Length: 184
Image: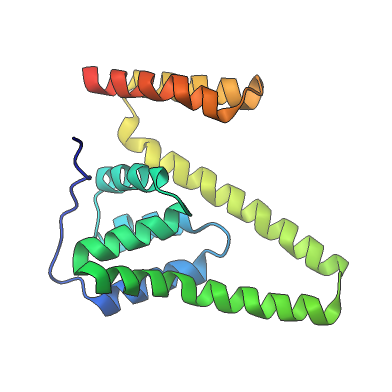
């Protein structure tokens, strides 16, 4: 049986702290929350170490649903149980929900406009850049692990360059990565 990643829980983290922290993530990160969540959790608040963040994110990627939502629930639950999970989730979702509802009302009122298409294209490009930056920061603990880079490179080559289906690639490379990490 595997254990969940260890997180150094601190009694100083309160439900309002969780709400405020994830609210700032939600308001800062419309469309790309993981880089901002990492920044808040690891760099700004120090609630998680870089390795703890990477391990917890890996766990959250296995769960159904958006990774950042899973992450907020796991961090909140770890620090303050069910109320912490609810506080972190509410903080994360409050502003994006309000923004989406306002945009829906605006689009419904104005109809399709070129300016809206261009604005969404800009947001998409910014979100892609944020995801790339987060990937670089998250990969830093793997700096000297050639086997991890080899598995990542093989996955990229198979999916992005050879256009192989993702699930079979993961079915093959996942166990290879686990075996290499276990041997280390």
